[in-house]
Figure 1 (spheres, one colour):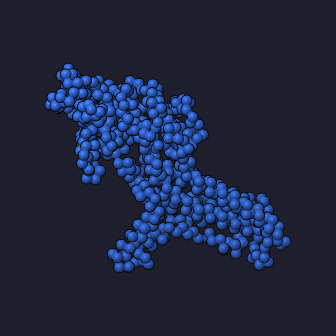
Figure 2 (cartoon, rainbow over the protein chains, first blue to last red):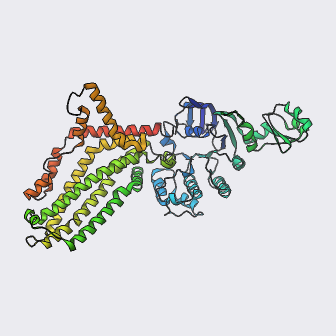
Figure 3 (cartoon, helix red, strand yellow):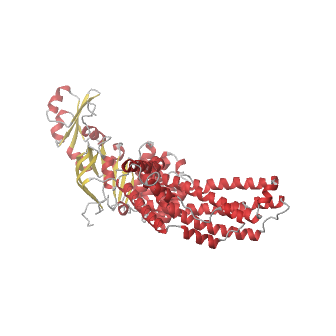
Length: 294
Length: 294
């Protein structure tokens, strides 16, 4: 694979469960050395997209990860790809040391020393059975295991689901400081978008199986603008500029615009760059099955 | 190779209860019973009249225990195949096992290999220990009956070796003979999980019913399918009848018995069965690769 070749790419990626199409022809490239956030509402197709990238599910269209068809070469691909799809998925019957021994013998790029080093600052004992560990400890163990794999692509699907804020912060800090490098690519999905915003280099928004936004984080500030209008008399003038999102909260009207300049909006109120969670709420507006906006 | 050994070790750790812990408990109970027998032995005059020698008594006890262990092994292996082939799907653990760079065929193959090696060896060990424990009742009876002397330890040790050699060959042949049925259960377990055991019986029954309706009951009793299965499920080897041996007073000789076992096997049927087993394991691995998590 040459320098410029993406780590992962998809063209016309479609997935159908029975008669329902979950992914509607996604096209994207993920270059090496980036930290990607894949964000979307429940059921948007995030996990299905990740599963397709990991070779766990067969899809229509063309998909390539590290130059391979992931579905046909899952075992080979996993030498260079590490993933956590559910922190509670570690085999519960094993002891911690048995898990590390098993991975040492089955994974050519796993370093037992690194895993033990990552675990050294935790309360996890080598003799402990995984089923006796707390949820936070299992997450710590799982992260130690994937960080001990010399992988080129790390995929994390809701890695901190159900964990407390202290642990979540520590999790991402460790990931950034001890694992990430220019040679490695990280693809992460989470609903706690504010917590990962600081570390992302790129963002992909997926809604109802369609990629509705895909851009570097630098471009988010250039593309989206948030306007808070306090003067009711100016609301209609601002709405005439066609915001992608409109909401009234605490007597103020919040609008998010796409492709508008800050200076064009400044006369109507306070102009800022929306946070990822603001943008999430704005872009995930959709009609639900039971009527009403989600 | 180390990867396969690691996967076999993992199977052992996950399923050792039925093959190590339960037999250890049974042996403990047998030992307690045998020790109790040494202080409370009582025999009738009729028993003394029918007893050819205490060495035969010891051999019969041990051979019966060995036969019992062979039945225990087959039953437990049926449960093992029913459980192991779908165990990875429990608690979302499949997501972890799919992250290990080993093909589904390797993982399934390791399950079969464990069922053919580690667990039978554990039961063989239990059989050997049973042979040692069986000496205690023989010794007690010898002490209680004035007409008989307890079996000579040297002779008993020789008998132990003879029966163990026969048991090893019988276990090996039995495992290979019944492997297609075990793999059939494993294959169904991959698809239907906990329903594998009833379906393993139900599907041939439905097949036989369809055959009966199609042929109007022509052919052998129960139809061709059931007749074939009846024949294929029995491993009758002439000359292994224990009652005959007791009556004749003939000591166990490994050489002739092993020759009889090997000569009594339909090797063509066994070979075809192994081929069927290989196909079933391959199909199970393909199902796991293509459809589980999809």
